[in-house]
Image (cartoon, rainbow, N blue to C red):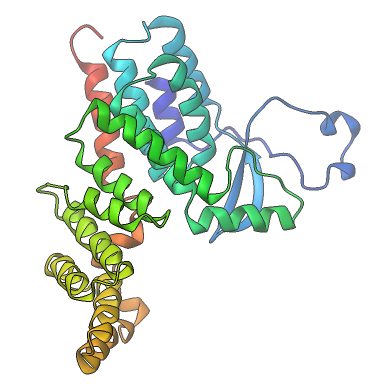
Length: 306
C-alpha cells in the first residue's frame, strides 16, 4: 500500500523521458532502457513522452513476493487498482497491470471486468486517433491495436466476467455496447435490455444505448421511447436529446424533432456541466468509482490479519 499510495498521491520521480530526437544527446543517453515510458496526449494529440511511475511495478513486485496469489487482497487490489488506472487514463500502466494480473488472478470476474474496460477505452476514437497523430510524429505506441481488435478483446473479457458473475450489471451493459460498436445491433440490444439496477447512470446508459440500437434497426418509435426514458433521468443530456431528435424526424414529427435538438445545441458551453450527460465520461466514469475503489483497497489492508 505504501507504493500504491506513492503512485496515486505523488508525481513520478523527477526524470526526463526519452528525448524525441535521440541524435541530439550523447551516446550514453541514447542507449536502450528497459524502463517503460508513457505517451502524454491532449485531445488525442501527441505531446511528449515521460518515464512511467515505477511505484506500480514495485507494488506488484511486493504482492508477488510476499502474498499467495489467490489471497483475496491480491484479487481485490488488481480489480480495484485496474479500475483506478482506466478512470485516470493511465492506459500504459493499465496494460502492465493486467499483464501481471493474468499470471496471478486469471479468472476473477472483477479483474476481467476491469481489463475489459481498459480495452473498451482503447477502442475509443480518442485513443485510435492518438495512434495516428503519434505515428505522424514518428512515435510508435505499443500495446494498442486497431479498433475492431480492441472491441473483440473487450467482448471476450466481458463474456468471461459474466460467466463468473452473471449479476454484474456493468458488465452486461458494457458488453451490449461493445457488441453494438461492432454493428451487431439486435444482439447488443438484448444485452442492455437485461440491465437491472438502482444506479441512475447505469439505467441512463442502458436506455441511451437501447435507443441507439433501435434507431439503427429502423424502430424509430421504440427509439424515441428509450431516449425519453434516458431524459427522464438526465433532462439536459445532449446525447439523448440528439437521439430523440433523430427518432422524431424519422417519425415525421418535424417540429418536435427540431425542438429536441435546439434545446441542447443552444446551450452555451460555459453553462454545461459534466453531470448533465453521463455519456461524456462513459469510458472513464466521473471519478466516483476511483475513490470508492481506492477506499476498498485501503479498507482491506486495514482488516484484521493484515
